[in-house]
Length: 229
Image (cartoon, rainbow, N blue to C red):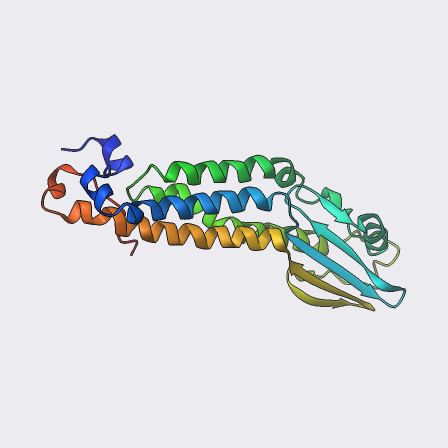
């Protein structure tokens, strides 16, 4: 009987299988490594951008969010937000920004570890990276909502502006101001990483499940990637 560790790690690739169909067993590795590299590359690129347009700013004001910092016209937008009672943007997601580079690096390492796990538990290692782009947008929405609904009632224009939720994506309007929010190249890389992981899991299941289903492997081999439904 297979040990608990063997069940977690999954079946090893027999040499005869590797010799006959090497590419089939290399495909999961390729897609997992591509995903890990995409995540690392995304660290250096912007994830989200918001442009504020108003008559007094013909060229607009923009802020760009990387996973660990905000750049652009942060001071000018903070100055405008002060009048309606919104807190400075730098106060948002301080913990997330301080941990972001380490967190994305860990996600990439988990994907590398998933290469060596040929069982259903590889999904557990890959799942955080799959969900990461959606968690990023969810966290952005949380902070935009938090800031927009908790305005300072003592601000100079507090009576003129009601609490609001700035859009995480698309176009929003507040008085004479129009905001345009869009994801950027770093986010697209993270999203591509999620897709690459899903493809890798599919090819991993195709490669290793037959080893379990075969008569020789059904008794002695641990469970490989199984149906998720």
